[in-house]
Figure 1 (cartoon, helix red, strand yellow):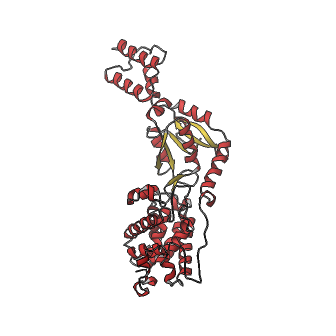
Figure 2 (spheres, helix red, strand yellow):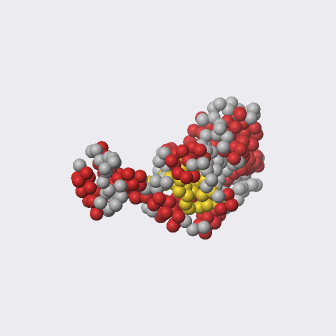
Length: 410
């Protein structure tokens, strides 16, 4: 049996078969009875079977499988989801390393450092892309590599069974990458990265025209029971009325619809920039979000939660509501929940046990709601039908004014 095993392994080594095939072969040999005992022989190239088995899930296996698993903890410097895209300096650096070795990156968000190290040692992840204390009680079972904070003796880590991965990360990482990736992240999160023309928030105030899409706002806001001017205010916040606007995250058109959301709601990618299709899809999405907040009985309050979810994601909003409840606040009132939206940007918030979805850029979401509500107020003086007749079919434009209950959005 040992002669057969050695023959198979020699073929593997000569053919330079790595990763999954290598691992499967070793498992097969193990099942055939090739075990280490007191008189076990060395492999032909000088390594014992135990040494081989200890490293089969190292760099070669990761590259063969095409995936590297990153373990981390939610936070502004480590990892967070923002409008459907993953961010965090540690994540972005790890993603670049994964690209350098030709694999995709999968993220496993851990509860805390203890959970992270436990998973790393159990082989449930490949690299802890999070600053681990070098004097940690289990540091002897880890290999430290890559980005580090010298003043705190903290660095990324991999399990001791992955020396080749640790070496690859160490050779790849250069201190200059830290500042460069940080600048890239700051750019993506700034308005400079959004491609759009900035139009006036009021096309013709004296004529009562907010935008040339007023007719579409009336048409589709009526279907969901919204005031059309609220939808117009949201549209301006999203795209400044530019139908060709595109964000760093890939959101498109007047209402900044994400391609993934468009797919779910049945909007073809070919029509994602079409003004009517974009607005109609946004209305459909707003209606779905509103349906998820039926527990908020006040319609006026519910609109705040819907707007916040459109911007920051429903899960983060629910986390803020859970924090508000924990602190004895009224979870059905936006002014009570808003402080906890902001708190999700602090360790006190995103590390709290009731929070399930981690860090959130709360100031942006709170500002988003406030700006739309303020603009909505300024639009509420618009009552002329001259604005809403634009973009309507001729026969629809001739409909008598009394048929439009614009003030109520009905």
